[in-house]
Structure formats: C-alpha cells, structure tokens
Length: 168
Image 1 (spheres, rainbow, N blue to C red):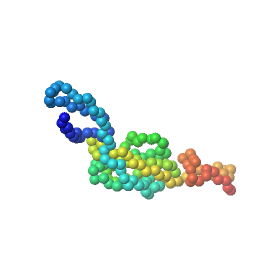
Image 2: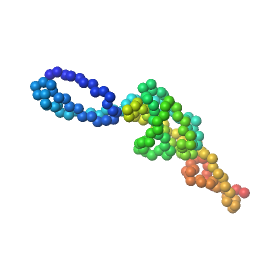
Image 3: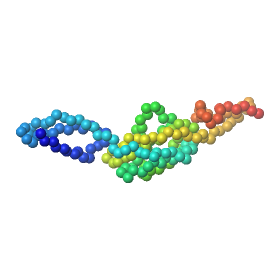
Image 4: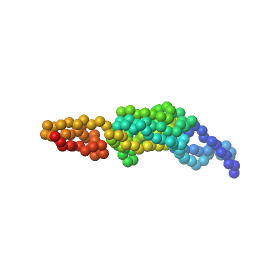
C-alpha cells in the first residue's frame, strides 16, 4: 500500500470541501469514499487592539500591524447586545482608525476588528469594549422654579447627572 500526499492550494477560508481519489491502477474507474473537511479562518486574530481619546461620540482605535494582512475590517456598535455577530464590516488600511460622530454619549460601545487577506479570506475578530463620555445637555427652566434637561431620554439611567433640579 502506497501513501501519496497531495497539497491543495488556494482554498477559501471557512469553506467545506469534499474530496475523492481515483485509482490509476487495477480499476481506473473506481473512486474512493468521500472525505469531507472544512478550512479554518485565515490568519490569526488581531492583537494589541486598544481604544483611546474617547469622547461623547468619538474614539480612536489602534492595533498591531500584520505584514500578511491586505487590510483590516471593523464594525462599531453602541449598546452591544449579548450574542451580537457583526455583519456590516468597513474596510480600512493601516492600523489606526478614528471614528467621529459614531457613538451615542454615555453608552457602552464595542469595536470589532478582523484582518483581511484578500480573496474573501478573513481572520476571526477581536473586540474592545468601552464607554463613551457624557455629552452636552440643555438645561431649561419650566417657570415653576424647576429646571430640567431637554431630550433627557438619551441620558436615562446614566451616571452623568440627575434628571431634575429644583431651585429659585
């Protein structure tokens, strides 16, 4: 019994394949049983992912560069839900991105990042959680010695400030 190794190249990541072998000996028409296998994700998960310069609506993200990645893809969300799986990826070159006016003030947020290697080959994603700062609030007076914040819904349940003050 001879053992022959054949290397399959240029396969797509995260793809199921079925392979068979055809004999060239006694019965050239006979195919072997099928062997089913699935390719893994391409490359390693991004490393060194950090968030900085966080404001009420903006943040800067940096990560370690990978010489083999063609580019990177990110997805940013405010109020991330458990089990959320990002689908709307945005392509970016380099290993830094500044997102402006992308987040809601005083809310949890998550930034997902994966490497892109071309031909639809991507790595698994990494993510970083953070919390945006409090944004500007408009204080109004109702004429009955009560002050309140306009459009306070955006600040409900937050730690920025209470929703009502009394005073003269």
